[in-house]
Length: 277
Image (cartoon, rainbow, N blue to C red; front, side, top):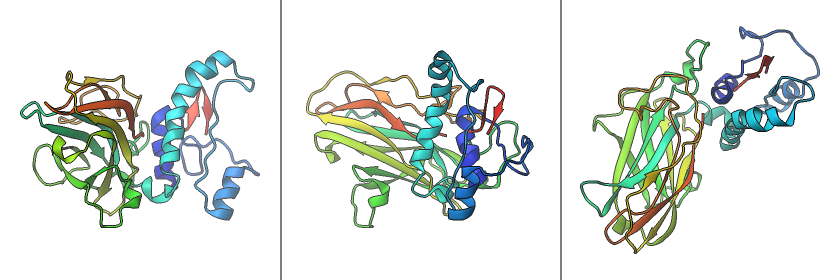
């Protein structure tokens, strides 16, 4: 569980995994607080050695260290509630909402769910937690999955885009919804995937507004830099970064407008500039 989480954090910044039995392990050190927290309290604790100098320049810190590590820290925050289980579940990438080109009163929610992409990092053998098939992906409207007590009505099962059964470690998924089902106002979609071993992954989300005006087709926002450890599959988004971006924009249906804000979350951690973690 701890290695699965470490691999996923490493997928953002490409830091080496520095721990016993890892190829990049250099030497043992006593008194490390991460070891104590894990051994004494079972905390999923990591230490990151960052930068190139003990007294790092502000320029390098702001322009390189922060951009390469902030997504990793955000991911760690996303799984903090259940790090040993959420780290073994599938991750959701490229969450988008768009207008259905065939019917203006419908919207399409799409994403990519992968059990392997973030855990099978470069220069390391494939890991056991990345071998499971996607079992199910749920879409929630304005309700976080942790608050699902079984009585929530605004929950849908997303389907593979090829309309076949879930049978791969990575699946392109989508669902069509009518805007008549969504009242005007600000809303949030939450998406969570589950693998064939029953492990749930971290939750991804996207904000959007529904109004009664009609404007132009949504446009894509600049993506948040995601992990890029494997080549996209034939049905993936095809971007070099396997982006986790959201869509910004304007309309969705003839009588209702969907404004998508640049806030989709989902990320996929340990050596920097010659330092190990």
